[in-house]
Picture 1 (cartoon, rainbow, N blue to C red):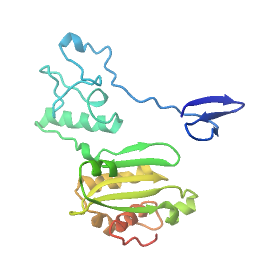
Picture 2: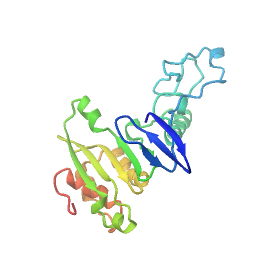
Picture 3: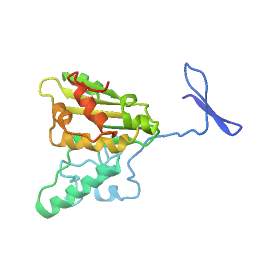
Length: 225
């Protein structure tokens, strides 16, 4: 986007290399930054990193003994559920001496229409790491439930290790993606393979069947494509 302006009761968005887009509203997201101002960090000797975050070790401890940090002020995705898991892990550590957050299976959701949700690695990340993988894709257009809802835009994509078949990432664009991603996160937390997902009996007709179908598609066995 290069510019946006109001025209009448709507908006016009200018984009580079394309025709202007007429729309009802414009949502502009400018990103997030750690909210560390006013915490008195300088007074206790805590130095921020290059992105303005509080450096911590694997147990949330800062460089100052007795001071720990979690949530949006430390590294990692700035998501409420990530901060919640860190809070629980830190409380468990205080009570039992051990607390853990699996950062590999923190789902992310974009609450647009249709919704976007993902957990784990993307194809680009796997390629950069030199990881061989297989991919299964299932379109919501082939989902009976999505068709009955009149929401057939989007698809489900499952990425699995080419050698072990372990699920490495799941990406969903479509209806209720933010809810559907929970099953994928649970499966990955338990080290499930795409075959494990594919062999789970899903109720019909449901949107969750699309995850099963995408898992089946990893090995070319999708039923309803």
